[in-house]
Image: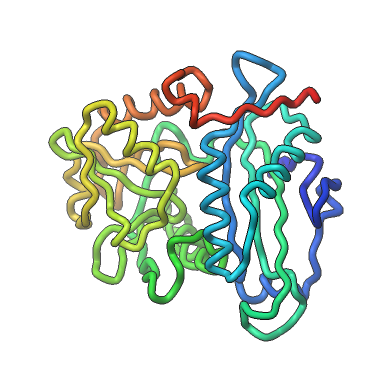
Length: 305
């Protein structure tokens, strides 16, 4: 059961979470005309007065870009200030997952994006491991990842996640933890809400943006860390059969962080994952504020004011 933080940002101010509600006639509820983000934040291990947000600037930038795809202008500074106020009033003491959401708040019934009211809110939940850090089992979904010419996949549009929901439930009901989706061309795209990486012959490989993936922020971080560590990174198409013969296979995402895949369909994968282990250790150190060279990726929020 989710443990929500006491206060949410709603209608321009912080109010008790239970009071933050929308009408059953809300446009976005009926047509999926919303866009969301997901951010992780943890208590500062070196200072109990502050909270650490990972790459908050990139998360807010993507949220505002997603809003633009819905013909909505959203100010990055406004979202940031709202987020900081919400964190300060909640004064969290454990790791949290923050969900900002921009949506068509109008009560009209026509499916449209013009001449319509929009708004945004932010709430958060306490969250540890979303997926087991020991590894997950996956199946190849019977559902196909959408194409960018049918849905704006460069944004986290809420309506697009019906496919993710169908794939995730299909996987769970057939005995697996997660689903891997192929695109219309039969190439590996991503998981239900995570990007995918494989390792072959010491090279880190991930489907490129032309494979209908979401441009994940954790994905981009892993690519940058790998290249700085001297690991060759290749963004290209990945065939389904490559998954079964790769040296390492893992998922990345804000909620999932870096999670290994231990089995796909009936094939068990390698348990030795040196490249993934190296990258996961480095990313954890950065998110905990222990890497001066990556201080720019961390935003500290004083929760004592």
